[in-house]
Picture 1 (tube, one colour):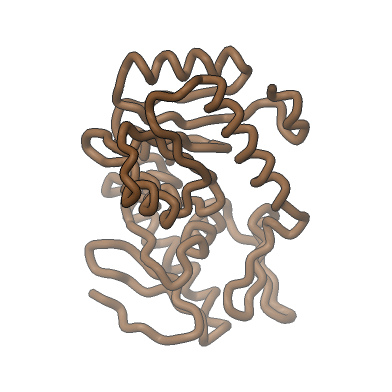
Picture 2 (spheres, rainbow, N blue to C red; picture 1 turned 30 degrees about the vertical axis):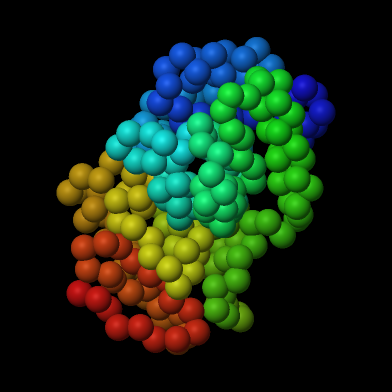
Length: 242
């Protein structure tokens, strides 16, 4: 199965399923097919696990305690909008299917399902995703800036600077949500793995550094959203919501 996906020998999957028996059976089946699977029993655990890992695909049950699959998918997209995901659900309501695909889901499987079908659908998603990749996948435009994510280099005309790893990770998260909200707790858990006071103060320092760099383009700004997080605003001014 995995041999068909030549670009990568190990595929990392985040599986979020609150039905303990189904979750363990699906994990064991996928691991037997040489996938690496992390199983979470609720949405909050799924979010924390995603923030600390590097996943090629997320499989999310819609109805979970603490955080449902739709909410979890939105938060995952805030962290990395390129991560594909599919929903598992006991429901077959058109509104649920519609909401799932509107969120950007790559697939939607209704319970009960065959394990073999899940594998076929996973392979189809990964083929589509990898077929879209190109040599420019790590290059991002931020206003007049060019940001090379892999090399951590920010360029504007003749100006060029190498960002620290934390600066680059933070700018990547911000640019994933251009003109949208990057939640403060999401950024802390993703980059520092903990949203304690000291890490929060450290993140504020990096935000200040990025602001100074981005001032070279007056159309680019990082604004505070009081009690919530930050926005990377491009092409128009917004007032800090403090």
